[in-house]
Amino acid sequence: MPWVWNAAGTAATWQDEAPKTAPPAKAPVPAGRKGALVTLVGAAAASILLAIVPVHEGVVLRGYLDPIGIPTKCMGDTTDVVVGRRYTEAECQESLETQLIAHAAPVLACVPGLAGRTNQLAASVSFAYNIGTGAFCRSTAARRFNAGDWRGGCRAFNENDAGQPQWVTAAGIRLPGLVKRRAEERALCETGL
Image 1 (cartoon, rainbow, N blue to C red):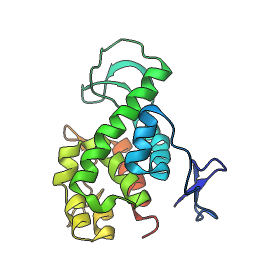
Image 2 (cartoon, one colour):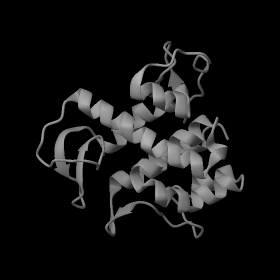
Image 3 (cartoon, rainbow, N blue to C red):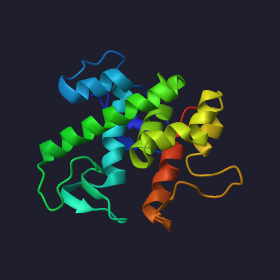
Image 4 (tube, helix red, strand yellow):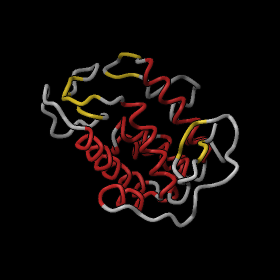
C-alpha cells in the first residue's frame, strides 16, 4: 500500500492504489534540521518519516514513562527527558527531526544500499527509531539488505526465519501497537519491490 503524494510533493495519505505521479524531483530543501534530514534521506523519505513516526510513536507534549518505564517525550524521543515537563509543539517537532537524523545516519552507514530506495529507507529508519540503530544494524533485516535480498529484509521486520513474529515485544510483553507498527513498516518496505 503506497503513499499518495499531494501537490506539494509530501506524503499525504496511505492508499491501496499506486500514486499516479511521483513527488517533484527538485523540491527546494528547507533550512534547519528538516533540511538536514531531506539532504540525508531525500525529500520523499523525509516526508514519509515525518508523517508515519508520529503516528506510530504518538504525540505527547510532556515527559512520561512509556509502557515499560522508559522516560519518553514528544514523539518517542528518549533523550534528555524530564518526566512531567511540558514540551511545546515546536520543541517536539525539533526533537523528532533531530532524532530522525540521529537514526538515519547510522542506518545508511550500516546498509549503504538503502540510499535512493525511498520506501525501504523510510521503513528502516522508522524501524531503527523504535528498536535502536545498533539493534537495526545487527538485525537479519540489515544483513539481508546488504546481501541484496530486499524482500527478505522487509519480511524480517516482523517475522523470523521460522515465520514467527519478532520485534513485537518490549520487556517480554507483546504490545499490539508494535504488532501493528511492524506490519505497516513491512508493508511500506515492500512497496515498489
